[in-house]
Amino acid sequence: MPILPPLADFFRTASWSTMGRALLKAAGIFLILNVLFAWTYPLEVLGRLSLYNRLWPGRLRLPYGEDLATSYNLSLYNVPAMFHSHALMQPKAGDEFRALVIGDSATWGWFLENQDTLVGRLNAAELQTADGRRLVFYNLGYPVMSLTKDLMLLDEGMRYEPDLILWPVTLESFARARQLDHPLLQHNPKRVRDLIARYDLALDPDDPRFVEPDFWGRTIVGQRRSLADLMRLQSLGLAWAATGIDQAIPDDISLRKSDFEKDVSWKDVEEPTTLDEGLLAFDVLAAGIARAGHAPILIINEPMFISAGENSDLRYNSFYPRWAYDQYRQLLAQTAQDQGWDYLDLWDAVPPREFTDTPVHLTPAGSQMLAELLTSKVLRRADALR
Image (tube, rainbow, N blue to C red; front, side, top):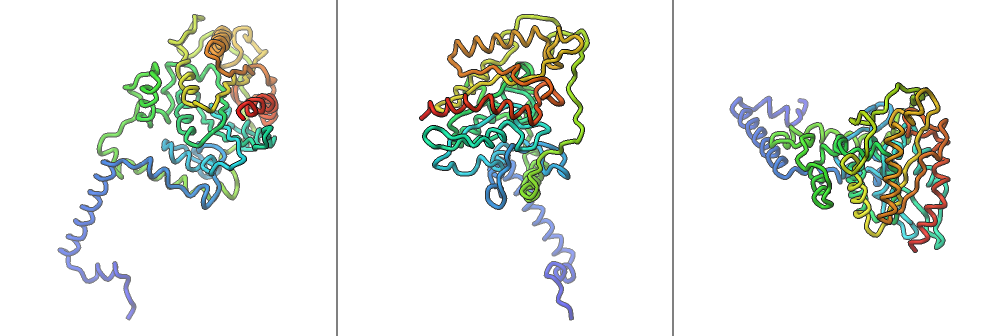
């Protein structure tokens, strides 16, 4: 006589009343678990449980993307999970001079392999300080432009003992009205509110864009997508380790526009006006410098595409009319001088041919040029910190 599995045997022999009681108990346990989950809301704790840097190597950039089938990557809103999948989680070596590079998709490396990003090229240079420490750069760039998004990631990154921070910025990142447009910020209201309060930022802590689930939304059922994303991130680790692929790069990349309409608008500003801190979030930049504390920040006005096409006398590129960008450069340089910030302006340092689909995304050759421009300056700053 075949031996039935215990569960099958239970259903064969149990009465309807027994099965009903078992189902009620299971439903009760599930309800209690959901209530406990909503009460404690342990998503960030769960995000710290990771197979990366243990069973397989840490990622070289923060997870971002939606094409799981070809890029072995995904976007999620759990900041601890993002960091615990990253190579930054490795213990800091005794001879390591640790440098974080934050910023937007240009830093992250849109349409670039990891080795062709700015961080990849800087690490390939195998730089050493005068006292023999290895400069190791970590890519904490993340797509979509917002200084507040950069600040939130820097705030988390400071937990991991950086010695230096490079912060490439551009005018798009300063737009105050767009600071909280980023989904990563909207799904982390507690973190953002803490930064607003800590640094007295001119941002609304009650911004309606913040996503705040009710009690039901905080349960296991309500957070099933977030929990599934945590598991997906872990399950993709094997494919990432085997291939190193975390971005699907097309064979043909549509290039940025070179010709423009007769348009001088920037964001919601239709006509030339005077830019000030009401429009530009300089307070967020100052907060980042304060947060870095002992680890100095090098602010870099990142290179951008400069068009010579139609109406290029009105616009540098599709992002910026000349009047707005020129004012921004003057304001940033003056503020850096007044505040004693370490600042480097590389806005026109890379030739137009080395930009791809947007005015700030570089080709591999463009990344190499930028890395070479930064090498001596970074080494000088590292040696000054001995």
